[in-house]
Figure 1 (cartoon, rainbow, N blue to C red):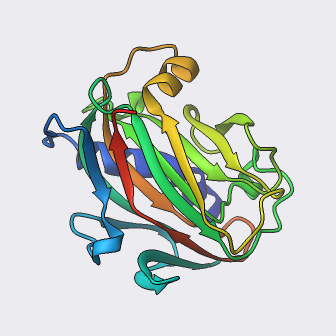
Figure 2: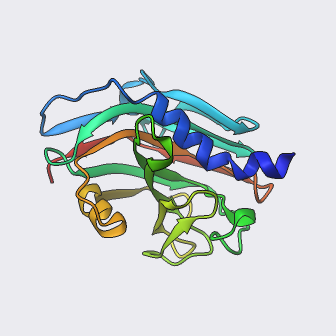
Length: 223
């Protein structure tokens, strides 16, 4: 029973985000803030649990408000449904840090599909939820920085991209920028104009491990 449920982990996430992302629109701005954690806000962020509960809470670290994630053999995430026009603001910006690495040997199989930190975008398939797509930007452990592979649960409908790896130090903030419009074109071969949701997830259920991570503000920009 558990194995069957785990097989649906990522697929059920895509369905959840599809259902909750059909009526959002965005203004044409130079910068669109999704995660304003530095202001102490978690407005419109929703929780989705797959196994046990990763604890997400606002936390003061290094003199700033950030989002802290504590995972102990758990798989749950925070999601915000908001439609973003990538022709207006294609670049996803965020910062993150991890406090420890997971003991994962192969992240491309189901037993290794855990990440101390990940930020990802979802393109809704509408009522045809099987057409939903996602790009996951992950802090990998076993994979090298820059590696790309299909998600172990969702296959080619979800692409994993290693932004950081075991070569990057723990306890250190890193700022990231990613051209989502270009990534979608490269990895799905499509000119996708809109994404419909952004998610954060620190999960350790496959490895039965523990992880503590921090996320700074998340926003889209023109460049």
